[in-house]
Image (cartoon, rainbow, N blue to C red):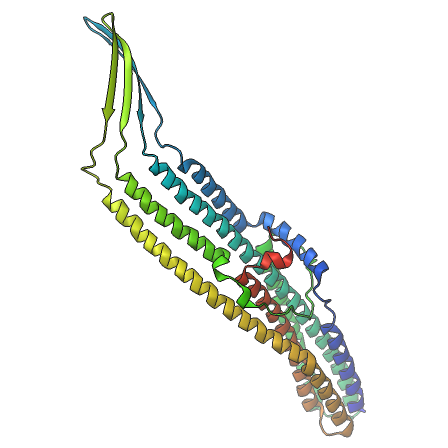
Length: 410
């Protein structure tokens, strides 16, 4: 009788678990639209994005002023009362060689382009982090629901085993095994609650909101990206490094032109003892105390560093793209195989366990051990699902198409 009743409980447990796994709906265009709206609202308040936007505005403002002359005209008034009264007014202007503001402007423009691409990289990284956080919360909720189902089932199992023990159908050791299993289920549920709370806290810190109406993610994963079609040199991080290198090369020319002295021209006119006074002056600095060689050497070294950083960015982007593509394909393959064969194998294991219970081949302890294995398999399925979705978002970020996939491309 004990074995027949426990078989019924096993059927209920596995039925709930299977329904649980099939609950999330497939991710489609409608879900992407919902994700796009959520992420767009979060980005508007995200401090990392706001900081990158401020840096871009600063770079653009510098670019606007970099091509202007650095020197403004100077006006001078002089009055002297001696035996002869002298009063003059003069105007002077330091004239920059035209190549100087042009070189500064080109360097500043490159810096502004780099800042714009850095903003794009930050947006991609933040969006991928948000989506991964949403997946983690979704995953932790499924895990909590599974552990809650297990706890409820184990509680009823303990009540049943105690009843059967009083009737003499099972031994006290089997009742004790049921109680231990129930206690383990309770601890697992509390651990799942803590894990969900931590995931929600991390998501709240990232998004700046405590909303609980987060979207769910389905079981069907997107097809892998063809990384051969991704132009690494067009990725925002690589382009940003390229513009930094271009700016550094332009700053070498700026430093070279800065060694050329800028002449100052002035005129003055006035009155001296009743006679008209007119004067003209020209002055040129003599680059003796500071020739500017150290500045040229420094900018050349910075240009070499920027070129090396560009190569590093290219290599890092290529390696990251390949690694994330491999990881996603591996996880997706595992998930597809589990859906194809693993779930069926689990159902077969359930049937086998039921037949062995009916035939008296196993007792309560062995039954509980195998039941735990079933729960472990279901929990692994939930973990695999979450890891696969996270790997997908990391792949989208590495390929620079997160905003395009979610429908937010600017």
